[in-house]
Amino acid sequence: MAKYRLEALLKMRTHEKKRAEIALAKAIAALQEAKKKLETLKEEKKEIVKEQKEAKKKMDHKMSGGGLIGEGCFHVNFLRKLKEDEVQKEEKIEEQKGVVEEATEKVAKCRRNYIDSVKQLRIMEKHKELWEKKLRQELNRLEEKEMDELGQTIHSLKKWRGEKSVFEL
Image (cartoon, rainbow, N blue to C red; front, side, top):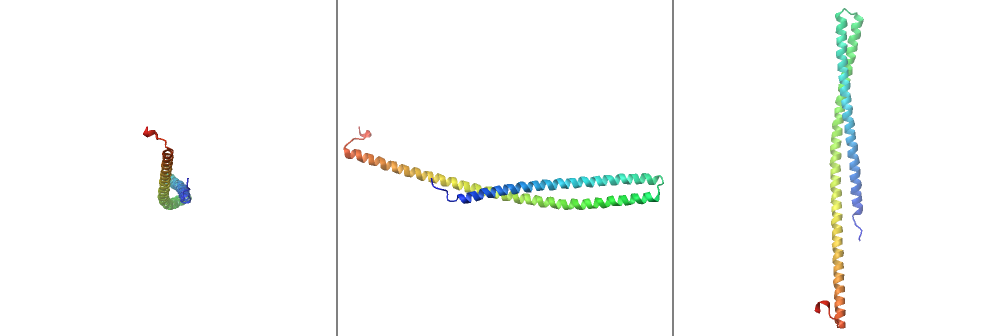
């Protein structure tokens, strides 16, 4: 059987599909990791807000009972630090949202590349199937032609020898 002349291109399309598949898997994993980190940051912010509320309650409780000035300054500085931490977490959350958005776009791009590479591979595989089918048909046609010629030769030999064919009896 003849060799498929586009075999190298078919192999190249197969490799492209595998590379696109790997890139898509990596992009999906990166997106999941980015989402997980975003959720962690949100949880940390909730903890800071919770800690702020508890610190305010403690400060209100101590100050209502006539606390010392030094303790008041300590609580105010502690609350200020918690507020700064909350602002920093919010900034990190916004940055992470950008990272998640970029990862989502990369997944969409990788998915499109994967779909395109699968389509191209299927086209090449279909072309090869049609080529093989055409080749088989050509071989069958040649075989039938040879069989007809062989039959004609046998018939001519029998006629030349004076033998009757099976159909003439």
